[in-house]
Image 1 (tube, rainbow, N blue to C red):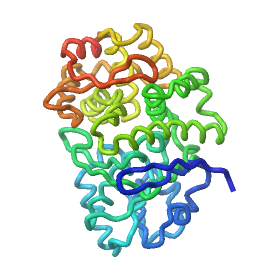
Image 2 (cartoon, rainbow, N blue to C red; image 1 turned 90 degrees about the vertical axis):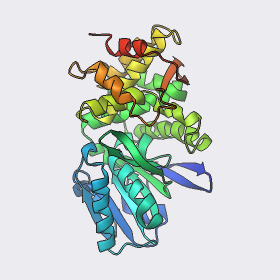
Image 3 (cartoon, rainbow, N blue to C red; image 1 turned 180 degrees about the vertical axis):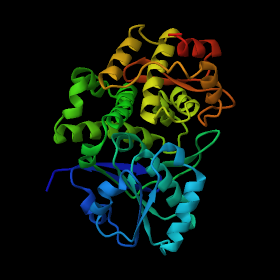
Image 4 (cartoon, one colour; image 1 turned 30 degrees about the vertical axis):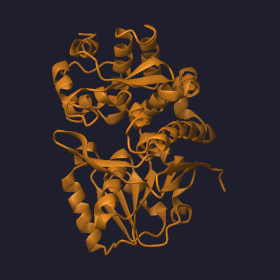
Length: 353
């Protein structure tokens, strides 16, 4: 049996385990301690590849792949299918897929029959290191991302790194944006590892990949344990996201989440330097790491800075009508700023214009 890495996550009223390793999906019921009926929610990309590996489930509900389908309309359809399948309050909803599936399935689990058990089986690097841990779920509205949601802690997270073998290179790169973000927030050693290894990371051994995933998850675990409901320190996990979410929205989600985060990390580093918070050389260092793993660092020219800035005001992270930016003092040292002038934000976005 392959060796696994297990991280315990404590939250008010309970705890769950994040298990990282190879060949976990066939052991779903055993590892997640499931005894009742199971409804597996997946998408039409992941389902054909991995749903059959999850053992005996009572129904498989498949949604179209893509952020554009993370809506209340899709959720409403899932409620109807769960009822038709006879899933009751003794059931468990299992999310098998990337962050979109995890967000939607978690929201369904939080609200169906006032809440049923929920297990995360992330199949993308991005979902493993970020979306699957911490209990935040939600769906998008036309006005912005994740504006409807709930906190719903999973009963277990199974990060089966075997699924990363079928992940397209662009999706692996998208996940690396969140790994880099976690290094910037509080793990300089992780950030330095990515700096040193760069393009070789895509072909690393399963054992090293398991270590990388576990280290990135550990950063998020430590933050969400300290601040489970995003009242303080957890806001630091939004590094790059004020820019990134707005870029995604203005692009009509043609810019995917990971790529949006990468653009946001670069912008946040430049904004930090522009305001004098960090070494002027830090933005170039951040951009170099992003480019090493095939992530973008320049906002596409067809996305107007004015539109991106306006979109930021539909972001739920703003407070009292004021935008909040997570900025850098150095690798491993970040903070939240609320007094950033519009001219500085626009100047950063238009630095190549």
